Length: 167
Figure 1: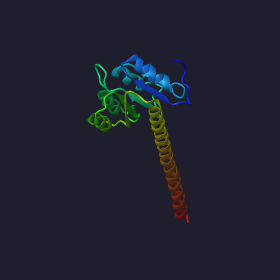
Figure 2: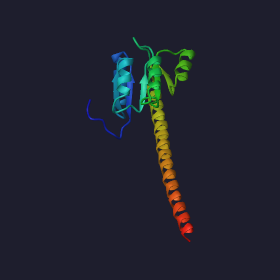
Figure 3: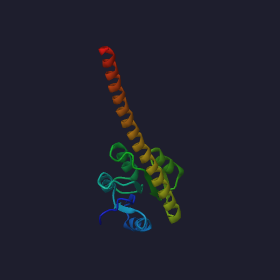
Figure 4: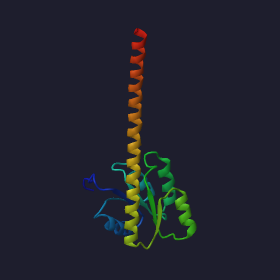
């Protein structure tokens, strides 16, 4: 794959069927950087490598390791635990959807895919992730700023006390 553009979100599409990878990849490729994996094990490796995906579209029904197990392992790994996952599957029973959402998926889309719906859900989840990332970064900055100001206040207090003691 060519060098990834830093300003475009990266989406990992996971499906064991090459035609599904092609269809979803073609749908997303104009707007996003698309990485693909054709198995659960490969998905875990790709998700834990640079560039880390901003969103994962994950099929449920795959041989060897199904999407639910992939989801469990993604959530168990601190490096991939916060990557939002949308299940994209032919399983359309209510209990399947509930199970996927209970595992931590942010959405559940059933096949056959409706391109406009998939694109809208992808866009929404990427906007939410961007907002969460900004809040996290802002909180990190605020915590560092508070610590810096507390150190400054302690220094001022120490200087003041030393000055008073000298008087």
